[in-house]
Image 1: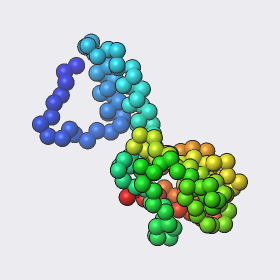
Image 2: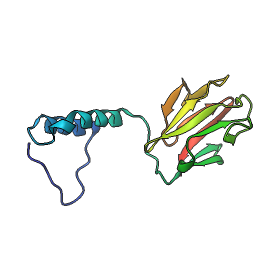
Image 3: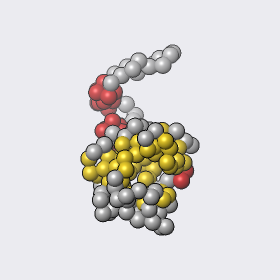
Length: 151
């Protein structure tokens, strides 16, 4: 397979097209054979992830009815949210456990994890144990729904 070089930015490709090109490159004979399987697996994991990339120096905001109630710098992660004193960030709303959930950084993704809360943690209406976040996702903690914003 001949490598294609671009003087300008490469064309927009779908995930399927990227994987197809990577597979074709992996099947060719060249000096990078030892890294092909590893690279393909990492690409599959990246494409399969539902999470959005967050700027490592940026922040994530949680909004209630359009007003910011919590802002977390990516450098502050991992962090816990709850109504108790042991939580890194306290939110006083009905149904929120003392230690309700945890936000952790996984590369440039942010993962939301339930902390075995009494009422559970929901993401876009679905009860979750652990899930990567996307911009504009809705997190439900107890009776409150918070919108995720990339800042």
